[in-house]
Length: 273
Ligand code: PXP
Image (cartoon, rainbow, N blue to C red; front, side, top):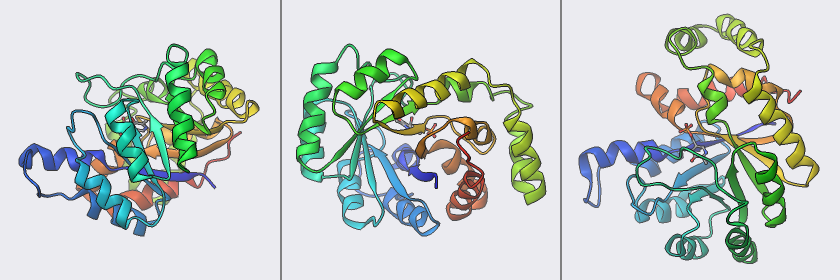
């Protein structure tokens, strides 16, 4: 079964928009995490950025204390954050590149150019009982380098794939259709699934196959939503999807529990072929 990790960073983004610098405020990402778990999410993902623009240290410590599923800490390979992770002991970390200017993580990690540093961090984490995932583009050289670092997972960056679906006809209007009834939802799934296996989808398919052959487990994430999810069904070997923005956005209109359940429902169609 394909698992869902809900990225709750944007709950903290909303809180920080009003309460930056305070030790409290709504909405609370920890409360959101508990709702996601109760709705069936298989894990919670949170990114402790070096600039603390959304998640704060207190959030991740509280998450570690209360969540019952799996905590995936997204992080840069930076000494301060590595030290925090080794103390926090999330179930898994996902190393991501961080650029201050970006709104969210925009590109994949350069494992080829940072192989030694990533290998060292991966070993430290594994020695502490923490699994490691690397957020990379579906690029053959990056996948091969990832396998050499001793990391257990890669997370394939689906941003370029997701971009294929943006536009008025494929995004806003059809999203509502996807939610309006089961039949409509299924017909939308079929039409999304028939979208040609374009270059980006092919890159994900061959990346997943290459990683699997090298012994890596394969996650995917970034930009996944209620519309583009169906086309991902052709990507083999996927273990978990990490989805944030679309679920948190959907929660504004239907509530977080319903938004998570809707996504899980769509994920049931995953075949991996
Ligand atoms: N996976 C990783 C590694 C991320 O950095 C992010 C956030 O950019 C996500 C998944 C979730 O992306 P989105 O919020 O677009 O669903």
